[in-house]
Image 1 (cartoon, chains in turn yellow, orange):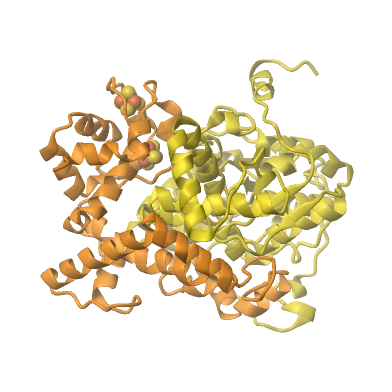
Image 2 (spheres, chains in turn cyan, purple):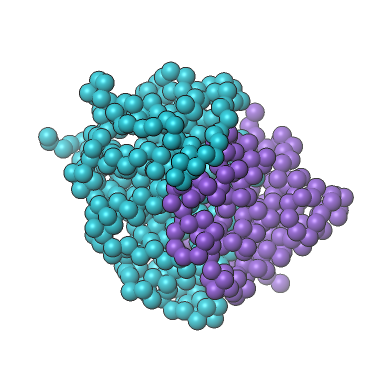
Length: 356
Length: 237
Ligand code: SF4
Ligand code: SF4
């Protein structure tokens, strides 16, 4: 196939992504809402792809949600991040693998700030030394976890059991990909495909047999807005922005939404439920919701991991219609069971957005 | 005494984010906050750039600086390399330091954020922890989250998290040594001082408005006011 026009432009944006030996830092939101995504990222990279990742219990939150809600000074977050650099340096790693898009944006902002204002870096080195006695080296390669899944998308495809194809029609699944704003809108050259043509998720979707939907509000923010969600009185901002996206995508009849930011994934899942309850509106073709997945969950499904091991039961929007389309077997009885089949009840069924 | 503009200039984010604006309006066109609130990032840039102390003071006391969602879409777009989102961050920081944030309904919400996210960070080492995503305060989370919330230990165990336990893994307990270092960073870098200022000025305001205020926690009227009240004057419609 001749690559031309827009496709050629997408290919023009490339980013250096290390091949092995990663120091991993977790995401607050992903740990709370999609813990199994972090579990499976490590599993896939280590066991299926044979990569080395160091999972350090000593790192803390980067404080990013507090920082973007303005209760954390820039100096404080810079020093917390500097401590993470120090922990990585001590363990002999140079490639920092970041699970959260908010963190990824912050780490990048900090290194850019230090490049423009070297005196700030020196000051933070002093503060870290004073507070913890630690010193650090700057990471050689700093990447988001979606970058690494993108890099190994073809290797993952070689292990694929269930491509992104509708088994009933033989056609590719139609997929909305949503990139977290802080992945590449702040520093376009730090994200695969830049701010104009972010390709990090589209690359996975295409490699695994799906078709990416190009809809008008594709690049609009999910609406998290930090303080605009954290404070109950402001949540209208958050839901309105997501709604704008759903309205814009619905006529394209997406089979699923995949996002690289844990916040976006959670919001686009929960706001569909909220809009259903508030206004009786749903966005799936048959009155159901559109499943919203993390890219780890999507990779896991493609590779044949069990949907309930992947944690799809934590989503408000049921993924069963998607599993059926992909021909993935599952046991509905086990969906809401605890470890070793322990009975821990089940969620109440909402009025709208079927949860199956 | 240093003027407000000079104080803003001490913030590298401000220095980085403000150059002469050519009033093209591109930032406003792309801004999700401008679509929802009575908010115009272009105006913020021009007003701050005026260097007029009174104009800046008005901004520090205003509702408008609290409308931005920090999506940073404006950073990609401004042809002059301005970043209204970063200017907003510098304004909010100064507004809290000088105590002006309590003059606006949206500004007073910093208290609610400090008492939730801020306390999570200092107590647990996370911005968010599942036991603090209470369905009563998060009805948008829906019945699935309610089920998870009730069975948090079992659900996390089922999914391979290391919930509240020693060692590595999702939602692990952050060790005492790591928490000590985090606290020490907050002491050394002004993090604790900012928290204290938010508390002090909020207490003053709570007294002035005659709202019940407690030293700790979220079970008090001032918290409820800052977390839930919306006087309905903020949005476009
Ligand atoms: S960062 Fe703030 S001002 Fe800039 S586009 Fe986003 S909401 Fe608007
Ligand atoms: S995009 Fe830049 S130059 Fe244009 S109005 Fe906004 S701040 Fe001014």
